Image (cartoon, rainbow, N blue to C red):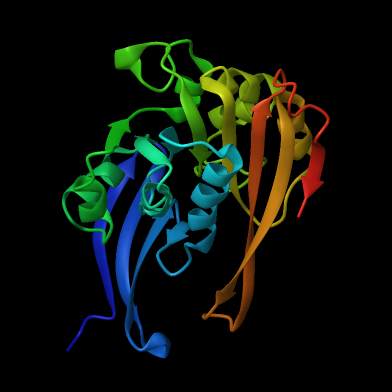
Length: 253
């Protein structure tokens, strides 16, 4: 008999109790789903990754250039990184993941996208604190201090006001976003996933640093409820000093 539920890993991480499980969903023709929980709260599911895909696509499209060097904050199940790699404009993807067990899941083949990421020479997965790197002068590549990137794609906290850890909170201020933006090249883009609808306050923060700030709503089917679910993707493009984009303003769509 096929197992309907299986715990693949269960560890006490720096952020709390971390659980990776795999289950078959009978109502979806036994589709296999991978899920991650932190302290009993769902973080992500392979059943829902439309917003993670959109994060990569919207971030890359907002830049408009080619041969882009991209930072992905948060590895998770790997969907944002994989979607970025699928964009022909992307030359490299540097993934920053705080939790070593999550990196191990991919390298050990416990997750479907582990092989995809491992076999792509454009990918570098590093263990580190995204928020500390964003705030520091060395940036996202300690081996090449001061290296700048074309886009930063962030998918770690639930929302700008609902964090996995209190120390993340400072990032969502103007000073926090401004420090991160210092690691971007001219014309650089910051894009971020958030659960639910956009928060006007954080959109204003992005607009104070970038010439153009948008919040996209991504709606997708929820086969469990039979309805729809929604996430938001914030996108800031063109640093405020880029005169070509100044005055573009804020927008929600």
